[in-house]
Image (cartoon, rainbow, N blue to C red; front, top):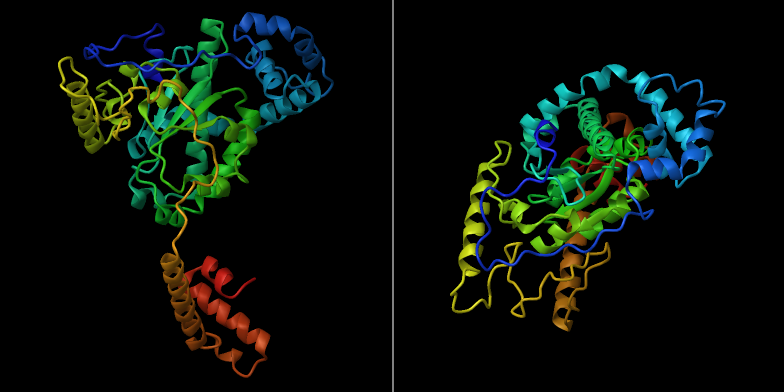
Amino acid sequence: AGEAMASWGPVRNPRPPSPGLRTPKSPPWRPPNGECDLDALLLKYQAQIKALQEHRELKKLLTEPEHDDVFLLRHLLSCNGSISKAASSAEQCIRWRRENAELLSQADELHHVVKEILPVGMLPFNSKLDEPIQIVMPFQVDFGQWAQASLDWHFRTGVANREVAYRLCDRMTRLRRKLIKVILMQDLSGLTWSIIYSQYRLGSVQGKLSKISAYVYPQMLSTVVIINAPTFINHLFKLAAPILSKKVMDKMRVCQNAQQICAAAHLDYEQLPSFLGGGYDWDAEWIPPHLRAAGREAAAARRHLHAPGTPSRAGALNGSGGRASTSGRDGDKPTWTKFSRPRRKPLSSRGKVLLFVALAMVSWVLFSAITAMPPCLAPECTGVDLPDRIRGRKATVVARFGPVAGYLLIGP
């Protein structure tokens, strides 16, 4: 937050762009309500704000200086102008912040602790909409140290990260007189199914934080830019949809190259870090050294391939490190990846037979392992009826392989 507050004006890249390197253009941005000027929004919702100030239940809680028109405006915009819903949201926000005042007072300290474990930082450039940009690498963390932390610690640090970002957006909103939100870039490099299964306990924490953020931090998140997503990202979003709010899901954009990242985050190519496929050599301390070195090598290769006098540009690397289109139009009109099942090549007859044989073998092995187990681990289970024996075998499976295996192999 301190890095983003250091400079309010647009910052130029200290390294000039390479000659001949085409900068992707972002599509024109249109605010949801056709305006983002703070004074114009306050004037437009003047009657609703006055109605909230005179609300019977809410009026008793509006006692702090920060409970002003801007505070009420954020809740109105989040509730689509509904006075009753905005009053309920603002009331929940004030009560929660008072009950957790001690936690909020430690937000800066907890955020500093998280930055020592989790690679996270604020980009020194604001977007073209003057919005701060936060980059997070949640799967470049030391999972041994990360897994030892309690769920309460994860909840407290999650609140601290959101509190720091909300304070920054609120300060910039009042200074610029524009409704400022934060753009979140999630770099999912390193994400695997084994990590998801080993860290499944954090899902409840993230769901709780998502629900709290809906009324404690309204109008804070502009866009979530997903970068380096694995191939199973569609299935992952289907699993996460029940615990994440619909507003957050609607703001997510899955980007496959630098052109789409620049368009989603409203950045120029020279402002996108090199480890994300851009041209900015960012040497922040929190960036993992191997990603920093790989980004510099990729940026140098792109500058060489796009330099004037290159005999052929066919097969040149694009912003994401993959192969670019030989037509030179890849990324001019970025399209977002939707959360749908990816298209796969249909299996041949031979592939279907091999798949059937493999599934049959796996099923036979699992069935043999279950039937070979003792009916129950406890001595008092001998001589009991069949349902109790089944429950005893499920207890054995759960003890050896976990609750998911017990549910899948034996049933509820």
